[in-house]
Length: 332
Image (tube, rainbow, N blue to C red; front, side, top):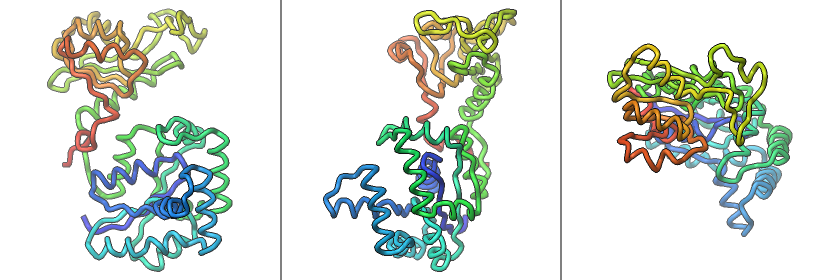
């Protein structure tokens, strides 16, 4: 792969950091973080690092030194990496002036814009583990970056666009396409994507869950999604039937997959279950009973008792969200 210089842009919560991290960890890009200038300046001034102080410092630096200040201060580091023959990714490019300055001083700069709807971005920012933001803070940050930092320009003039509203593997695949790298999804990645598609058939909007069970040779045995008993009305038609804060109108996706196997006479001994959410305790007992030996789940959902019992049952639990990139893709 030829040497590259990439800048990743986007609104808060769009997923810029995930793109940068993937380029760093999986494709060995060296990162130049514009935000480091803000943090260093706050520390030198003895100010607390928080959302309000960061915003004020960004605006003050640009008011005093011009809108391209971050690019100017970071240029020596960018040039150093390029002279060393390193692929480089810029994280934190905001203003139109920064982009103009870099285009004038760096050859072959390519800009990747990561986009997502406001509702998705706001939800991500409210749930992030480090410094989550309230709705007021997110809206204030959006307005500030558009009105005061001229952020719309770099996004509008990007060379590539990634719509980041789906799964992490799909995001990584979009990056690979931009880099011109052909990768096939690993079996875990492949079947988790199948489970995600299956979940779209779910009829309980409290949680759409899909499950697929495969044999050790990667042949699909059975599938299931959360829905009502055959012939009975769905939550989407008549509403939820709540008992102890659980909707009991539907059969869980994992249970439906087990029942389908029993109905058609398919053995699940030694199989692998892929589910968009970890199974509840009741489903787990059935999974263990039929001899499934591996469970790959998209997110841990409510009942953590399965963790305490998986080892005793000889079942491997795999959190798909924590799999490293080299377990998600295979190079052709």
